[in-house]
Length: 132
Image (tube, rainbow, N blue to C red; front, top):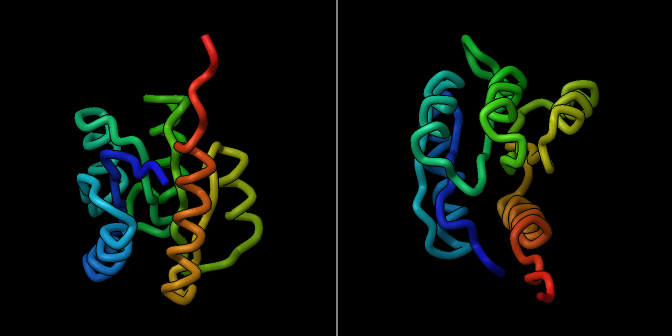
């Protein structure tokens, strides 16, 4: 599996960032950039241009859906996985319609989170180079 070189992890709760960061490090080496709000995420994305964004849905101020829209305005090709503590189908469908590639519930067992991350990263980044 080809791991993205830079990952932006966005969540207003530091303990969630720490937990997900530890999971990401189990997948392999990557530079992890953290943001605690949607506004911080948009600013960090503009500077860092990460390969992958893990984005919380529920944040004060600019929520995850608005942040996703802003990120897609900056880079229509950005790869975003939504993190949610709620399984509200409408919110998940809206995030996918806005361009998120997947979503992960925060209460999912650790092994399943790792599997979903691995499958999504593989699908997005392990594409063979086109023949010349």
